Image 1 (cartoon, rainbow, N blue to C red):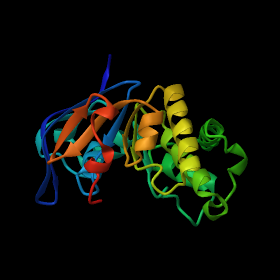
Image 2 (tube, one colour; image 1 turned 30 degrees about the vertical axis):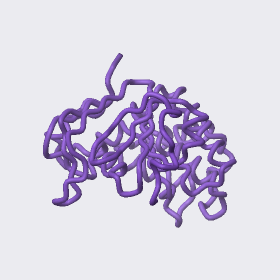
Image 3 (cartoon, rainbow, N blue to C red; image 1 turned 180 degrees about the vertical axis):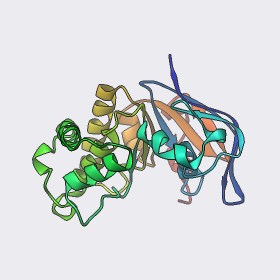
Length: 237
């Protein structure tokens, strides 16, 4: 099975501060993995390293075929073309329509042909059930609809990997479950691996995958959810 992410003996820094130490992690194609852990434990820093926002300085890292240690600024747009990113706060451009949000990302990742861009925008919106909202402004959409657009945006370049940072964090439980169903269904359809940072243990229980806990500046794989008490784990958040 092809590895989408391979990290060995890595140290991850925020500016000069060591956030995560001795990190070893692999993710295979078509796999879903959850990152759980306290706020500030390093989940987001780990994800940011994978898509080139933070520089990997120590260890080895390969993400969708890119060597993170050798990554140049000029490589980052092409790395991100192979990665779809879904954020907690949607990060849609509020002054433009859904179509213009999608077009902006395509232009930034090298698309040129307007007809192909429009065709792909409609395809990904159909995948999340929102093709009828292509000309809507973000403020006219519900939170769940905005996150669906965010997922559609992540799928534009047929990514090998989807990174999701608390994708249900700003949504009510019913909408959260709906978004998880959409995200996992479209990831399977696109044959994308998924790495998701989350606090939402109910979603982890409903949609099983590998579970990695971020604690004590490291990553620890958990065999079964019932082997630990999430309330004690997340005490003090």
